[in-house]
Length: 385
Image (cartoon, rainbow, N blue to C red; front, side):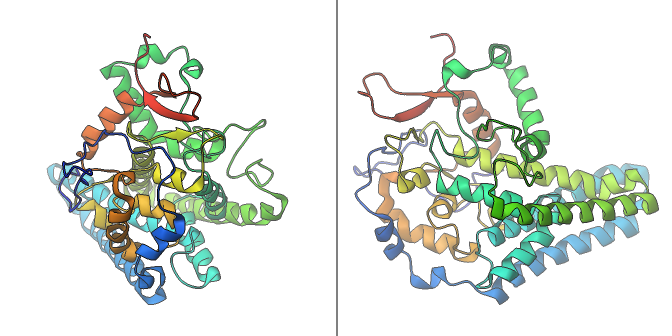
């Protein structure tokens, strides 16, 4: 997975290829947000309702066809073939389902159309069908975009300081422990984040995306949270009725396993975008929006880049201008690369290899020795210092 796409590692000023792990500059860049916007062709900021629906309908057709094949023909297959058919179905549904979730995410950024009510309606339907509270996550995700790379104010993937590592971490810092942590993370981190705010910003009281009184939300946002909860409850009720009619095992095979794959990809994609040894984090003395937005990395998932609507290989752009539609994102990314120069980070390491390396080497953050009080922090991994 990965390593087979069209991404290329940028060159340094000397013309040599930049190492994947070479740190990006942490000083204020010599360009402004306005400069970056001017580098992007104006049509990239235009949203097309018809084009957006084209990609959504295409994904829904693939989902429907594979569902029809599974529901109609799989029950009559001989047992040896079912062990091949069901995993193929799960992979297709999980990957395309992730693409549909990404379109819902784009709706949350108002990147689907020029009409906010359309984006909210489509996003609510798509995310509710995948048990994601649309408005609830849209709001917290918006705060993440507004504070990316900030150690105090980011909403998720906030790295720990070495002094804050849990006592048991030393027992997990080995291949067996790491496999266990990764398996748990990919399977359960997404629902645990939504329900308990695991890996999210720490608040003084219980924090939950389904709670309209959560500290995540203001008073004027409470109604949107209730609407999100109603969407998820409606989807859950439909699933309950399906389980009564078809059986729980059938529901798990048709819907449950693909949903686990979607959840796993959500975690995998976001984790690897914000976990990389070359990326800085900033405290309040150094952080600003542009440097925070640049503190992310584009990845290469091979053919899945297209299946995931390029959210994987245009993530740096997405953090600078999150409302650009996915079908313009690659053109816009290529347009800003020359301007960003060494501030642009891309890593085309195969995804599983990158996941193992980065979760091993990105354990906590601290300042470099001799940094003279600058509020810039880098990932480290040595526990025995």
